[in-house]
Length: 459
Image 1 (tube, rainbow, N blue to C red):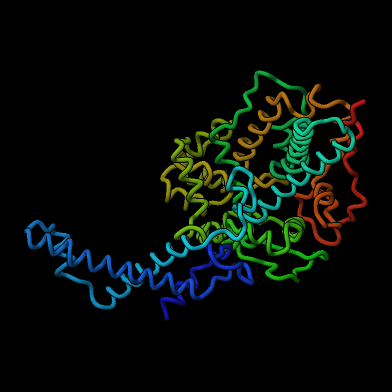
Image 2 (cartoon, rainbow, N blue to C red):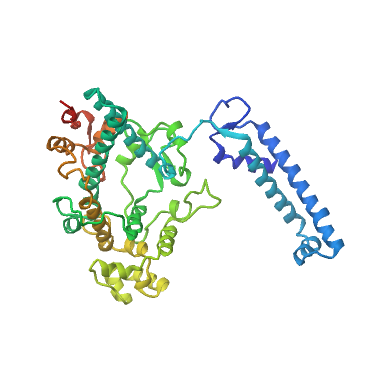
């Protein structure tokens, strides 16, 4: 019975499955007890048979022939105590029973919830919600363009809607998001006003940027917040620990859709990166806990990735950015404005030269009115300028859109996109990436300008 209870508790990863031969269960996630018991009995039979064959056939034959290895002799004559033997066999029962269950069960839905071509879109429901939002916006635009241009074929509609969505992402990122990340001084230094396309600029992603931009992990809250249409935490499971939502797209489908999640994102501030709490335990100790054998450590993964890629250490990148390179505890303490943190880093790394780029970057004090320090502001700002200036299809580059189309695109906003593609009627009136408080910083969707597609109509 204890084994049965333990097995039942491990069925969470299979919650979205049903038996391949039986009727659909009354509730998603229900699995008949008979199915579980049958799998357990079959597992017990298979494990016992394997134990017997291993002991009586393989090892005894080796003993008779004198070819038994030291390990076989040890396992035959030096058995664990009774309690340990029972526990080990019970673990084997459990492992085999779970494998049998996976074979007997099939997805409740015939295909994945979010087919984006990249499984990372389902890492968190918040991420799934944003992908879903922009897929809806693409389809909405295609529908409107079809109404304006009935003669356009499917490929033309798809490509033009895709082009508009690409421009939207560029505008929202550079106009609304990056100024809050870099701060006004770094924004002016690294991302001045757009001039024109420069074919000598290499827009490819720098290896170091893939590590530096993971600064965003320091902004993650330990919960997924979901709010009702009055922005209240009154619905079922309004605050779910992050470790319970990784790769749980079913929560979007079965627990209210994307609207409560988007409201939670708009009305809940991101975590503030502090030098005494860079990352929360939900991603530092329990990352992907429900789909892996153990919880992973995201900051550790970030640092290991930089080592796997052979990225130079902290001081090498400060030199690249024209910043002073500390060499002593005191100098590092001055850069970090935190002598205690400098001592801890030096105790671990020995020299600032060895500090992992991610660790060093997120340890720096934040730029005024920004969310990163000097080094990350340089690396992130430099990369985004190259992405913009080296992009022939940048939305402001003449020839990509007409003057009238550019004027129309300049009015778009993420809150308006949310209004157009969800049931949400009240959204942030300020920059959506700021810490907005409901109801003070929220307005009706009716007050926000819509994208005017008239300039896309062919004459």
